Image (cartoon, rainbow, N blue to C red):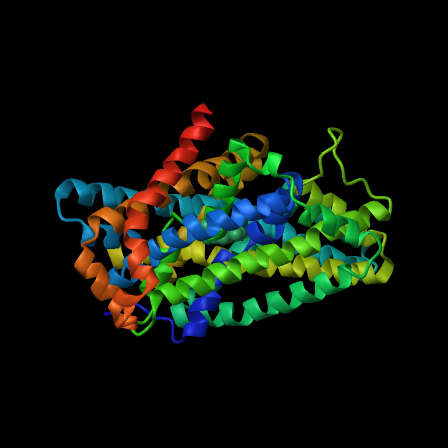
Length: 450
Ligand code: PFF
């Protein structure tokens, strides 16, 4: 059965695909700017603590459930549930997860479209096509829709090729390209005047800011978003892992790659901001905090690039190319969630499922674009801040309380016969049962009533 539904052909292929899902706009854009405005290295420490203590165990819950069931989240949670009620709750969790994955893709495709547009704008600038470059960088319905559709088409094209020919092949190509591009950019930016100032802001901790409850919930959301948790993405990727593989090791590799790239991106974005300041670009808001989010990426950085002459154009093309790749390897993992469910649950062909679901998501993106002020921020907050951690909480409960302990051990033994003697087996089962759900709830309670 596993072969018929597709499988990653190598460990490298899986790690690139899962790290590709994890490494996205959240790492290169979200993490560094959040760190900058929230206590620098102190935020980094809170983030690292949450990533290892909460996100990694939650990631393992999804990978193990997925590989055990060799099925999508809905079927996996149904399969491990002993009674009707648990089965129903499990199925609902899986279905909500796939809706949330689709909604995340609907805003992600808009932002990713802007990245492609900005990349092309730099090329247009290089060719002297100023008018076209202007159109590409201005916020308008035709541009927004064109590039969202272009990005969705790329995502659909890869997913329609299936697991090994589509997801694995493209992740194994794009992820090394992403890493090389990022390292080159970091190396270059660190040589520029002003960069060291940015490095200080990034690396000097301010604990007072980093320990506020509001910030911890932001870091929790960021960690869950960054590892693509709660929506069944990692579960479905886990379901394509061969039984020969050692799951805790693979999960550890994915977490490490994800965190390393976020930290590395901090070495690019913050120094770049202070280089911009050095070149006369405004990087602070009226309130005195660092400019972040869309204004940073689409205003501050382009202004910086324009102060750098021809080198700036090359850097700009490279930077937006990097962002586009990062977004693409993540978006394919989001689309795979509803697609895999539709194929497995309703017996539809992959091509048909991909085009129909991709089309529906593109339609949702269009609705968001036409009601941007009301919907864009709302969809982001609803999906990433609340839904992902809460769904992650449910996956932890199912892995910890519902999944039979012996079956769990059998699953882990498949790729690692000595697992019982290791640290993972001593800690993870009770940890995912008690500690993860409690911490997630405590952080939530804090944010609601604190
Ligand atoms: N992990 C991606 C990022 O950091 O940008 C976002 C993401 C991918 C979220 C896949 C959810 C998902 F299912």
